Amino acid sequence: AEGRKIAEDAPFLARTDSAAAAETMLVDGKADGLFGWVTAAADGPREPSGTQARLEAAGLSVAALRIVWTSGLLRYGPHAVRSDLDPEAKRRLAVFLTNLKSTTPDIYDLLESRHSGGFARVAPKDYEMAAAIVRFVSD
Image 1 (spheres, rainbow, N blue to C red):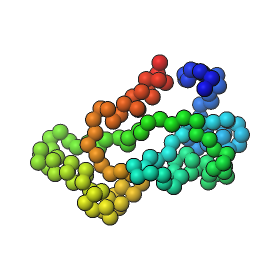
Image 2 (image 1 turned 90 degrees about the horizontal axis):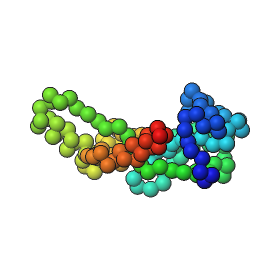
Image 3 (image 1 turned 90 degrees about the vertical axis):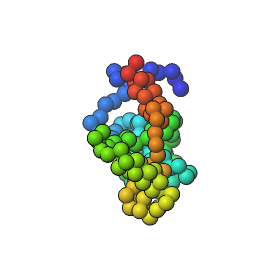
Image 4 (image 1 turned 180 degrees about the horizontal axis):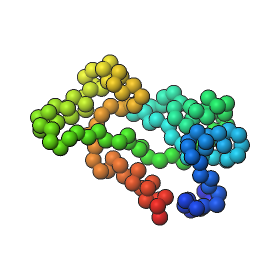
């Protein structure tokens, strides 16, 4: 809001060795904010997760937390298969994974209980937000 450029050497930023260390600084009043994450849900709000859940578990009330910026969706990394795998096996695997949530949700829940949305075919545009963030902090 104040037009401050975010750069690695910005004097108002404190580098920590871990997310837990940054969260402790916030809980202890040694920081005013932090960059964190929460799990996105394709089907609407869900229980607190990620940074928010850990801060609440550390004793910060929901009312004390204010989100001042959110990025667009950042996808989990893609799944990959060996290039020498038989093409028919690749096709069957892709069909299985991309249809798993809709065809057998109980199996999907066993395999991906901590991720939401199921597997999906992706393209470079699906990673545009991550690339934009990397470009922003690299400039």
